[in-house]
Image (cartoon, rainbow, N blue to C red):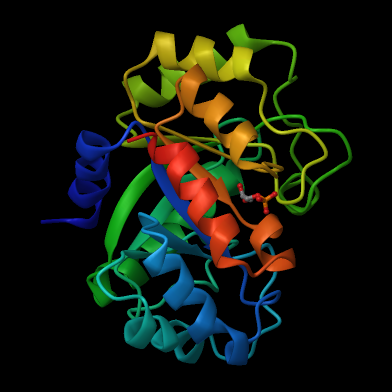
Length: 248
Ligand code: 1GP
């Protein structure tokens, strides 16, 4: 079974799937084993690994720690750039920043990354990445030099989602950005999920299990949390998020 099939499979048991994002620059190697084991115990559905920058010297070595402590939970790279590719992961989100108009982030870096991914035989899961306005400028917005989708214009997000569907993307990621002041509005999630049947990942600025549950009720297929668990390495919080998102 491919990683993508595994992700879809978790939707047959649960209302939505739960991904935990780990930024190597924010979670030091020494605290990783305990955190991974807690997340596995909380029954999360996948680990996403990546960040806007990569100050951590050895991405491969960092990912190797997952092999020992992530049980059979998929380990998926969520790359901040072509410098974040490794054979130590199970798959990579092959992102295209469709909300922007910067061709380097739509197709340029993908052309550079593709031969590397091919050589490493890494599963690439094509994902349309849509940045959504969320208060202060986020790292993703600044680093990509793109304007996010206006948060009060769900119809613009829906048109981008339709374009993503027609272009054949397997997943759509509605992204408020790491540490966003405001998470992606439910109205936008609802409109996009009613417009396309492509599975929808929602992340950025989700701070409570109740907030996560609202995104699921609005139509999210997968929820991502990052910062909140970096600040609170707490098994009970992980379990509360998992149960609010799974709802089964
Ligand atoms: C960022 O969607 C992820 O790319 C997660 O965001 O860190 O704000 O939870 P947070």
